[in-house]
Image (cartoon, rainbow, N blue to C red; front, side, top):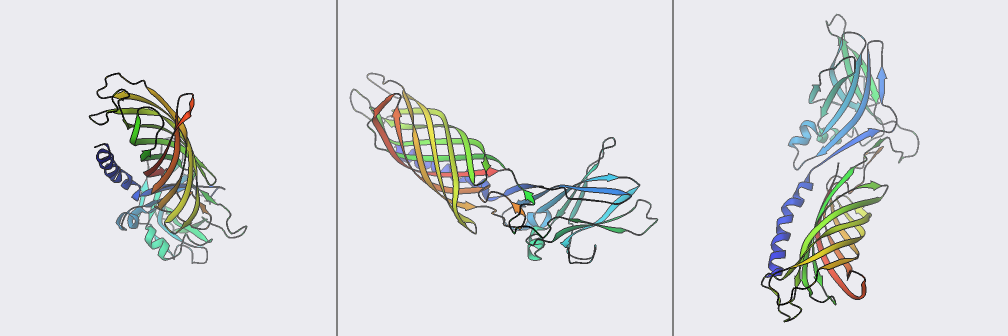
Length: 343
C-alpha cells in the first residue's frame, strides 16, 4: 500500500517538474555597454533571454534588450536593429518586434525595452558571434531633421575566446521528490520512504549550493507486535543542505554529481499497542543526476550555469542514524525526480 501511494506521488511531481520546460535568464554586462551623442545617452542595462516550448513566444520576445535612455533634447528612438559590426549602420540584421517604453519619473532616464525574435537572431548568427551590436535610429521629436544611427557594441572581439562579457547570476529555487528503499537497523523503521524537498540556493562557478526544507513519511512497524500497514507511518520533517556540480554535458543533456546531509524528525502515526518513540534521523547522501538542460545557451561572451534551468532523475545512496545512536545504521537507495529554476 505504501509503495502504491509513493508511486502516485511520484506521478504527481512529474507535472510539477514540467514547469522547467521554459526559462528566463537576465544577463548583465561585465563592463558598461553605452553610447552617447549631443542629444541622447543610451545605456544597455541588461539582456533578458527566454526559452519556451515551441517558437511562438520566443519569436515575439525571446530576446529583450532593456535600455536606460537619457534625453538631452526632444528626441525619440525609431527603428531598432540587432546586427553585426560588419553590417551597414541601421540597415542590416533583424528589426525589433516590439518597443515598450515606461513613463519617465522626474529627471531620471526613460526605461525602454526592445524585443527581438530569438529564432531569427540565432538563424542569422547575431548573438552567437563575437561582433554583435545594437543599432538605434534616433530623430528629433518634431522630425525637423532626418534620423541618425547610434551603434552600441554588445559583444566585442579581442581577448580570450571565453572572456565573459555578459553574466547571468541566478538565484536557485529547486524541488525534488525522493523515493527511498530503506534497509533499516533502526527499530520500527521500515521501507518504503518518501521525502519531498524544496530549497533555495545559488551557483558559485561550477558548484550549486542549496539549503532546503523536507517532509515526507516512511513505513513503520509496531515494536510490540511487529505489524505493519493500516496507516502505521513515521511522518518526517526537517532540513537539508547539498552541493552539486555538472560533470559533463552535451547539448541539452548532462550528468552531474550531488552530495548532501539532512536532519529529519520522525513522528509515529497509526495504531500501536505501545506508542513508539519519535526518531531524529540524520545522515549523508550522494547521487548521480541525469539532467535535461532546458537552455544551456553557449553564445560567445555570455556565461550562465548550463543547469540553471533543469529537470532530471537522480539515483541516490545514503544513510540515516537515529539521534546519537551511531551503531544502528539505516542505509538506503533512492530515486528522485527533481527540477530547479535559476532566475
